[in-house]
Length: 196
Image 1 (tube, helix red, strand yellow):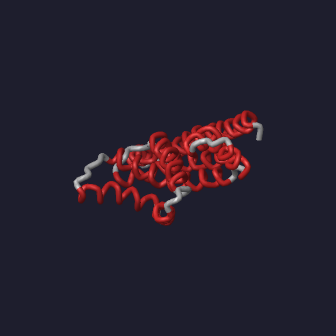
Image 2 (image 1 turned 90 degrees about the vertical axis):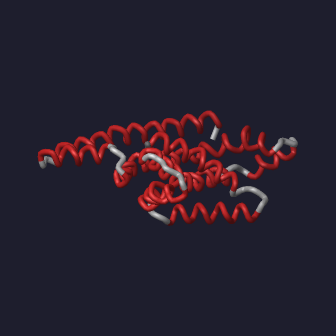
Image 3 (image 1 turned 180 degrees about the vertical axis):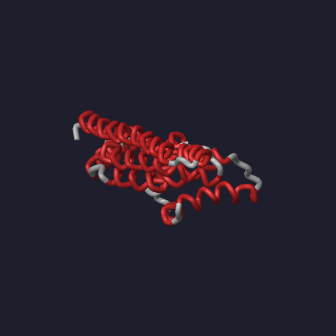
């Protein structure tokens, strides 16, 4: 769930960040308010909302899909701010050069702006990846069998919780620490490649 939710958040966050930069002030206002609403409500509430409110509108989703959608939407709001900061870090001269070369908006973003915005955004994107890994146990509230839920079930069989929960903690460490290291390596390589 974490991997798919993160993929959704990466794409959704970039889309939200780009939509905030449109010339239509009404759309920009709606997007900013949506982001603030999502960031101001707890993830567990959003998980419940997607899973329990959807059927009232004829949308029946499995707990797994509901969890992925909730995590993806929740972290899209956070990643949009990371992307927005990255986009704002691109020097004004870069934008002016693109205009002077008569580049289209799409080419400006795809070839010049987004590649330069990614380098400063990578640490934030990596932090939220680790955050998603740590938040996936919340999906157990709607019945998704994940590590913490499984550890709890194993512990309740013989009333020995120390071993399963310690093992889950070690698994989270074995996933989180290398992920954080990979993010640092990626950031360094991006900065070298872009000459920053």
